[in-house]
Length: 299
Image (cartoon, rainbow, N blue to C red; front, side, top):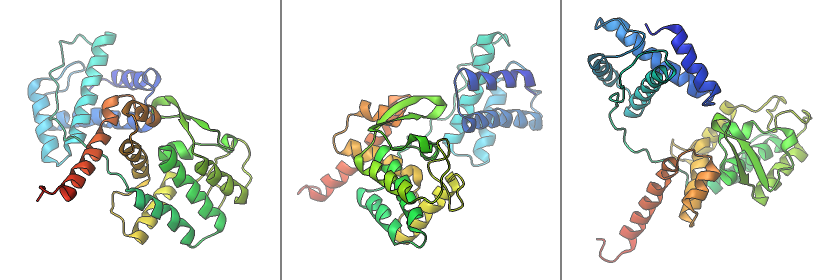
């Protein structure tokens, strides 16, 4: 097996130096452990502390494909393994030859699944027709407004504190890996939050969670997912409509209305422009559909 100190040193580096989040660290650790488990059980060879042969690597790829893992998952696991060996070589933990040949099958280009403008507005309107206390409806409305109107991740919205209200014109957000960005807040979002706080029966203090449950506890991501799932069923929306899809809608609708790609990158907090460029595929699909439906020679 790969030596435990090497594994720990790598994960510590990802956490402290690269500032990766907890979920990313768990995924990377799981990816490395999957390779170790495969080699240990395959009888091909004993995993050395320092290297992997091409035979072992190809057998692992074949095994993951046989298990039905998505190409995106396989690509991430190979990336994790390559990252580990690069770290070991650069830090002197291992005497390695060039390991750049570790390459995964090219995953398909993922196009974010968004929510149409009309469906987003329908979801927001439907909240007030649901059962429950008026203050909790205002909470749900304010939360979804932050996702769709400001483009926050659900974790970012739920990490806001009471002390962050009233929301300023520009909101300072700590995103993935602790990366800080500032995003503009629409007046409608500010008003929704003010209406919610004015009606909320719980006083959790300056450092308490901005969004609370019906018991006064912090409102969690699973509760947010249940909220959107309920609205999705009530309105007959497709299964890809999730809290994160509202963030996709924020980016897609900005781009569709002439938003600058670089500016959208900053607003979303993407480290790479290539991540933001995925939204151009959605806009291109819309343009193609309009062209096919309206051009006289399309049929």
